[in-house]
Image 1: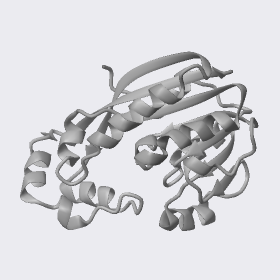
Image 2 (image 1 turned 180 degrees about the vertical axis):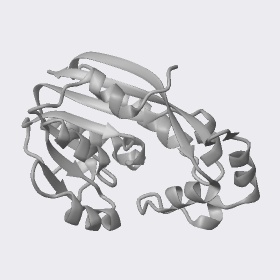
Image 3 (image 1 turned 90 degrees about the horizontal axis):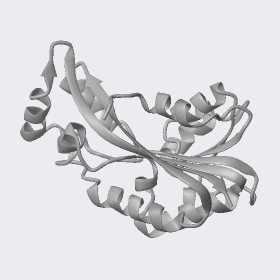
Length: 225
């Protein structure tokens, strides 16, 4: 698999200009901003109350409308959206609510609309680095299973693309700060800063820093029936 940026893969697969898009599980809002820069009108959703408090200040306005809401209960009318995007967020939906989240995606899409799901796969050096303090294997597998079952017969076509994202860090402290800063993951520093994680991190040293690969999968469902 080739190393690519997730945004470059998205640009290759879909054109969001002049489209109404739901960004389900928007996190800090990086993708919502990128979609708006590409000409989309964005409904950005984030259920974590701490992140949502920040997003209300920094995201709302212009082509982005922000709501504190989970993907299983989208504050969007039926059949009014051109696309729904889950960018590394479907596996963060509680497993019991994943089917509801896909059901909501189908509900809000207009006929002909698309569902774009980017998910990390259960492998790669970054997954192995994070496994001691943040093992998402079960959630990632559940997300893929629900996605397959819940989209059956709902779209005219589907496409799967696999690639690798490479994460680079200048030092261990930068890595620790990055993974502990997100309130929606709530990972304590003491879980990350351990001898085992430090050793795994140091093993990935390169001439320019530290590099880890994460295999990714995009499932694009097009032509909502």
